[in-house]
Length: 300
Image (cartoon, rainbow, N blue to C red; front, side, top):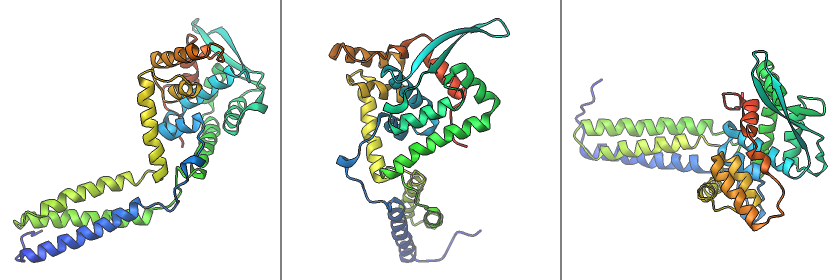
């Protein structure tokens, strides 16, 4: 394909400007959300909603563990530690949840524990959960996907996520940005070096195009940035509230970070509910392996 053209610099400049203007319009349309922003003062996010918003579905197991720890600490479910021996003679630990009192749980917690206890008869152990995950993966994933969809619906209802279909806008934007990139190359090839600007901006627009794949609204992005700052504070061990402890678990912080926050809470309020179970040997590992094994819990 011959890229050398006997055209004036004015012609090349005009084409670049027109495509740049069109690219700016498409970038604006991509960024524009149909949902109007919800008022911050009306937005009440639960700790598990913050965990889901910040870490997404791939790391939902940490949020689930935080929810389990909270409900245990509040005395709404009992936990029992058991030892068993495998066929190979290896001794292992299993944790069993039983005697659930669901009347004081909120909707999200009820949804989770309904999911967990659906795998058992009035009780569920990490051993049973692990077996179900391995032996009946389709049924297992469907039930947990329903829980993830529940959280996603909450995000949509609170204007943090959008269900707007942007397929056409994405396709048109890709075509326009590609034309800008191509024209920039042709312009430079014809020794009109202002085409470099078009090439660079086209790459920037491509990055914006990829970012537009996110379901987050403007408000969702704002809350996400706020949670980034929260995580930074938690990593410094500065939290001293119950929610700080639960968020540290949901965000997947290291055990030493979580313990530092827990100790801050105890110093502030020695009568605080007992969440020491989280630091029980093998507690986190057992629940994580039971929930996701060596993989991440993701939606099909």
